[in-house]
Image (cartoon, rainbow, N blue to C red):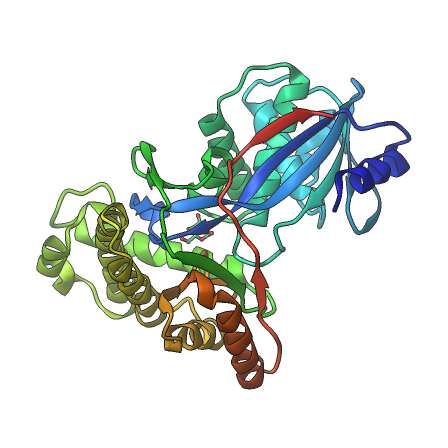
Length: 385
Ligand code: GLA
C-alpha cells in the first residue's frame, strides 16, 4: 500500500493525521532451522516485506488499532492489558503492551494503523514483525530509551506468554536487528551475533510460498519443542550439557543409544543442522555457493525425514526447484507444515524458474504457489511523516 493511501486510511479510522511511521521486517532464514530453542546458531535476514505502522500519540488511556483490509477499530485499555488474550486481531499488540508494562514502562495512549506486507501464515514471521514494530511504536510514544535486542526479547516473551506460541528468539531478533544486504549469524544460547554479507554473486534467493492452508502449526511446533526437551533431559543423565546445540556430531553419536524413536530423530536433526550452519557460513564467506546450495538441500531432507515438519507441499515445491539446472539448492524455512521455500537460483534464470516451478507445482498440488520479490533490508525503521 502506498504511503498516501495508508495516511488516508489512518485519517478515516481515527479522524486525525498520522505523524510517525514505524516498521519492522519479516524474515527468511538461510539455514539453522528448529535449532534456536536448542541454543543453536541461526542465520536469518530481514526482508522488504514488513509490518508498517502509521501512528499518532494521543496521550489517552487507550491504544487504538486499525488494520488494512479490516473494518473497525480495536481498543486496548492500558489499565486492562491482561484481558485481551482471546482477541483474534490485536492480541499480538496487546501482548507486547502487556509485557512492556510488566517491565515497568509507563505506556502512553496512541492510535496505530497497521499495513502489513508480510503475508500471514507464510512462515516469513508476520507475527514477529507486528510485535517488534508495535514495541518500537509504544517505546517511542512512552518516551523511554530502548535497545533493539531488548525489543526482540520482549516481543518473543509476548508471543510465548501472551499468544501461547513457545517460539525461540530467531524471528523477533531478525525482525529487529536485520541489516541491509546481510544475514545475521545469531548464537541463540548467548545472543552474540555477527553480520555476514549475503553475497550471492550471479545468484538470487527466490522466496516461494506453497500456500498450504495454515492449520495447527502452533500446536505441532510446541510438540517438537517437548520432544527435544526430552532428548536433552535424557542425554543429561550421562553428559553435562546445557543445550543440544553443544553436542558435536561425534559427541552425539556417543550418546545416541540413550534415545529412541522420534526423540532420537529430532535430536539428530538439531545436532546435524547446527553443524551445517557453521559449514554454510564458511561456504558463503568463501564464495562457495554450490556448497551452500548443497547444505540447503541437506537441511530440507533432515527437516523432512528427521524433524518431520515439511509435508507434501513443501517437499514438492523444493523438489521442483532442485530439478532446475540453474538452482543450487532449496529448502523450507520457518516452522514448516506449510509456508515458504527459499532457492538459490542463477540471476538470469529466475523468470523461467518461477514459470516452470510455478506451473508444475500447480499441476501437482492443485493450487498455485506465490513467488515474492524480495530484498534484504534493515530490521527496524522509525521516521517522522
Ligand atoms: C518459527 C519460530 C522460530 C524458529 C522457527 C524454526 O519461525 O518462531 O523461533 O523456531 O520456527 O526454525
